[in-house]
Structure formats: C-alpha cells, structure tokens
Amino acid sequence: MPQDQAASPQVELEEFEDAAESEELEALRAERDELRDKFMRVLADAENSRKRAERDRKEAEMYGGTRLARDLLPVYDNLNRAIQAIPEESRDASAALIAGVELTLRELTNVMAKHGMTTISPATGETFDPQLHQAMFEAALPGTKAGQIIQVMTEGFMLYDRLLRPAQVGVSSNTA
Image (tube, rainbow, N blue to C red):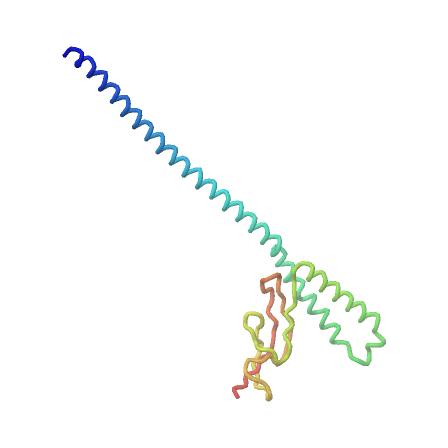
C-alpha cells in the first residue's frame, strides 16, 4: 500500500500537467485562430483599398478634365455659329477665313475626341430621349408624332460614358 500512495501523487501530477498542457494548447490554438482571422481581414481590407485606389485613379484620369471640357463647349458652339452665320453670297470672298474657322473647329473636335468627348447630334424626326436631350420647347407641327425632335438648337456631348451636356432640342407635342 505504501507504493500505491507514492504512485498516486505522481499520477495526479501527470494528469494535472497533461490537463494544463491541454488547456495551454487550446488557448494557443484559439489565439492562433484569432490572429489568423485578424490577418485575413486586414489582408482583405488592404486588397479592397488597393482596388478602390485603382478605381479612383482611373476615374480621375478619365473624368478629371470635366470642368475644362465643359468650358470648351461654348468655344465649339461659337465656331459652329460663326460658320453658319456667313451669308452664301459672301462665302467666296471670305473663303480663306471660312477655311481657317473650319480648320480650327475640326482641330478642336479632334482634340475633344482624343480625350473621350463625343457629340450627341440628334436628327430631326428622331425620338426624344430625356437621358440625352433637353427639351427647350414643345410645338405642334403637322406631320410629326408627339415626342419627335423637330429642331436641334445645340449638340450635346458625352465624356466617355457620362453626359457633359444634353443636346438642346425642340419637341413635337402633336397628340394625333
């Protein structure tokens, strides 16, 4: 019996040590899992930040010149008006001037196209689209349907896929 008593404290000590190691091991595993979870979240957050920064950079590159583009639109309109305002009888006498204005307008159009600007040039008879056109007036015009464009005052412009300025148009209000 004295041997059993001597072995008993040793067995209890080993069981206690095993239990303590097991608890410590579980605590370490829980800490590892928690740190892995935090690491994965930080990694995902960093990836999202990188993607957001790339998207913002691309958007700034594409649409950063929006204010300048809008400021150039009156120049385009005025060059068009200048060409249209020249009477037919004085076109021959002003041929060089007209050619210069047309060349300037063409160059401006090329530069605008190079930077992603496209014109919205609706034709008379097309259907009015509120996403691309701005109705300046409505009038009943015989031979047209309601919602058809009857007059184009100014062209509209897109910058890539964004509307810079809608085309300003007159729309038929015929009900028949």
